[in-house]
Length: 259
Image (cartoon, rainbow, N blue to C red; front, side, top):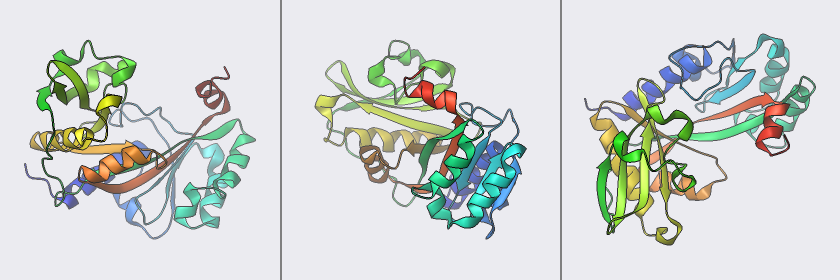
């Protein structure tokens, strides 16, 4: 199955529609869309549904997937500012201030990348690389490999590419089957081996392996994580959509180490 850029984008929008409880075409509208969030067994496995407030944009508009209690707040917010400004300060303080009155705060902000088939190609790695499978991951669930592998969802880690210096694993890109049609890539490289092209070589090869299996690879990074964003670009990925999610104030405090 040879996927085109348009095929991959359509797959991503269909998945986002499942996650947000909307229609894929909603992401292409000129006007913003507000829908009630709902749990769905086909959603990405790491999402905690239903959302209280989750904003998604593929660049045209905003689709807000919400708890109905916050419809007025969210509708007012996304109507006041241009799409791109709704995902950044100072404007997002307006939304955060209103949600905070209800025990919620802005928690996650991320940019998602999809491969550009015209740019994706195998990149040279200065070290030997090998495909890795779930049986190879069992001893790797440590902080050192926490971007590539997920301890909480081991059963979703399905494929990887490792780089070896002799017999030592020095870099690992792995993917999790977060939903039926899309596999998410994460990558780690040991500090002494960074800035040598290892991460991009592993990421690009893994993306190609995922495509061979008829799945769409995707990559997520905080926009402030320049090292990760640069790796995505070097590996042949391009920005596709952004998301911003509110969580309970207690959840945010716990993540910040206050509880």
